[in-house]
Image (cartoon, rainbow, N blue to C red; front, top):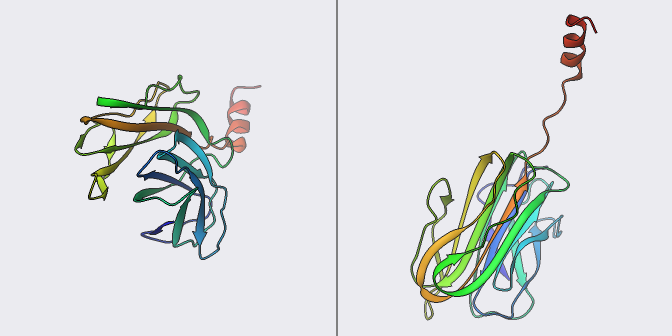
Length: 207
């Protein structure tokens, strides 16, 4: 497995989003385990195809300090990036997703269907070889990870926080080689209803 030490212990109720890539075409992610609990939490695949996948743990446990990504078979090289996000839905988290693979310089996840709510975070990843650029803002990109020196396999990830509905695409430019990309849109939690304020407003209106 790929083992990752988290920057700070997790906060209960937040969401962990893990972008994982490996060298090859037959090594799917088989699971993700948190430590020190040793639990798989609520991790489930949210988007992607073999060699580039996004998994999410909605309503994660607190106090977790590391995680391990396990693959279905041995891999020659692998990498992962984890985001911890607050304020997301603790059920019905995944809204839309899109995944694609191909060869060439136009490296893209393809577009999702139109999202169903305005307030979301979109997360994308790409696994290819060699130099990658993009995507452009408003995407916020993490560092490119070169996880296999011989073949220059790379993992690129990024996210953007949105406030309106739309179609999400994670699109990059790479050298002319094989690539796999994916994007997922994750719902924010619904704002709580302030029932006291609602009653006061109704009284003021004479209802």
